[in-house]
Image (tube, rainbow, N blue to C red):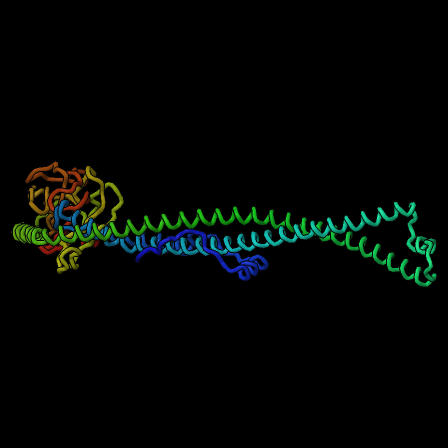
Length: 423
């Protein structure tokens, strides 16, 4: 998605449309991230993190360096939808901020146009006021020159001349009306001037507020634009990283297949050796404990990170048998046998790393043995009899492991069984 370019904030409207906005202001919600947008991005991030963690837990059979290439690839791919959602949200915020600025700018333009019109009216009103003041002054001079007589009728009747009284009365009436009109006009002009001054003051105040509103809207839109451009860059960078990791993984895919094959070969070799031990247990009815229960191999709560059984390998997409259960634990955590028994093998395997095998003899009519895989180091030797409090070794990430954990395998009469059914 390409970000719409921000071409500045000086968009203008027609004066008629702007005046309508001033008369009926439009308000928009603040151009911040809506709750549903935040929830959408947060959910995408949560799913991305969960996917990567599940992948890391299920990469049994690959060494950490090779697995990390695939984890990086999947991490980048999982983050792309998150980055896209953040970009979409940033673009929405930008568009909202730009609309709010356009409205504020239009309101400001209309207010400034009204202020200009009022200024012209004020200039006209001042000229009218000056004319009215001259007319009133003229009347005052006439009264003064008439000796202070205030009644035009008396002036007309007392004037000398050959006119008839009716003609003089008519002239006096006309003079009275002229005086009244001049005074009335002067008063009207003064009232209009005061009203225009009040309106101009109100518009000036409104312009100041609108200028601040437009400025803030401009800053918000600019900030939203910068955020969107940053998110677009991040998205492009993630896509580039994903392409690079994909090429790197494709080049090492054959190595991954070989590592999984090595794991399978070591598993089959261990199975054949344990078959002989099982046969001897049954023949001699060998018992090392009177208890039929297994206890936890770890001093911490058991948290399964990768279950037992068949599954599609997350890397190669092929069905693969996971012959044990993986439990989360920090490197260095002590590992104990799930029951009393005798150590039958302490090996260093290519895939399994440091592994300890324990024979528990006959339990509930079946030969039972266990394997503790990927140990950081071991603490027992072949032939050593161990109890539930014996430290077999410590949790590690040796062999083809992507992180610290314990892989526990349980064999019943030579066949792998679900460890959780016995713990």
